[in-house]
Image (cartoon, rainbow, N blue to C red; front, top):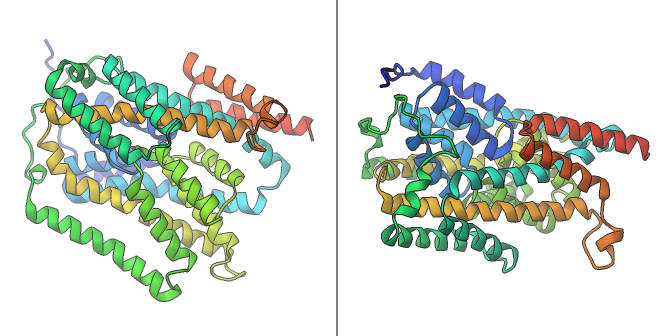
Length: 450
């Protein structure tokens, strides 16, 4: 019999330092960050129970935007109301923004130095292995029934072979989840655990049967206040950009583009990258394809959401576009990075603060959690598709054609990616260990082939 008691209530100051620490140590992309928060919040501190954590995670998986940052916002909101959610979400992003502004400046100023190029040469194939690991970990956590495997496989084929938009895949998966929950509820009962670990029986501060606090109940007034405030926080800076520089200016276009990226792309950071690539590289030419891959490598090696690659993309666009004149290149890049970050992450706060009360009302109702679980399964297929997308650009750096099928392949990159995948999946090495060793290997290869 378990005689443990739930932890004492947590003050806002203690929560502040916790979320700040998470902001600085949340390496490993969405999968690593979700696992880190699970370890800290569920296993070590017991601030939230396993099922409540997964219930929030499934909702965040449905939303467009970075699921790990949204999950932090959701749990912060559960614990300390609106300001707690805002604090958790901001601190999850802010350290990464400051670090990436500094690294982006180093990259654009010194990126052509041979030893730096060598480091990136090793990191990029390792990134493909990290994304593969993300698909594997998500699959192990969520694909616990053949029906969920079928949803994941269908999602992969729909995107890889038929190029269907992800919103359509989300809607179809949700419909399948709802239907299955009605006719075969046993399918989703197995998906309520976290990976292969048993559901914890240690009492948590926010436990399965903890009574809901007042702010977690739906209120039409609170919903309207969140929506109006969110719209104002979007409209005021966008209006200022248009008023000062005009609609066609790069900063205004960045604000609009990254707003669409936040609203129209589902499945978290890995699913949004193809959309960002298409716009930033092909449509606006803010960065090149090579720079985009380098930015993804930076995103994987720094703490915070992987979607913070938007700050790198915007910094390069602002810097190379000399938006504030040739004497203020760093300031132009930093301003662009802040604009991109603001418009990318603002919708996430609105989604969580507006939808949280509705989601809390569905806790324990299988007919409503079924669609969320099905969408999580669909995301596994999308992430696997992204692995192929990245591999294509890394393994065939000059492009993939029938003529370059063998002659244009980069054998060293394939070797590094294979070794990284084995280290992550077979030997359970950490993401940072794999990135550091891959970077050193890339540097050595460039050194001896110079």
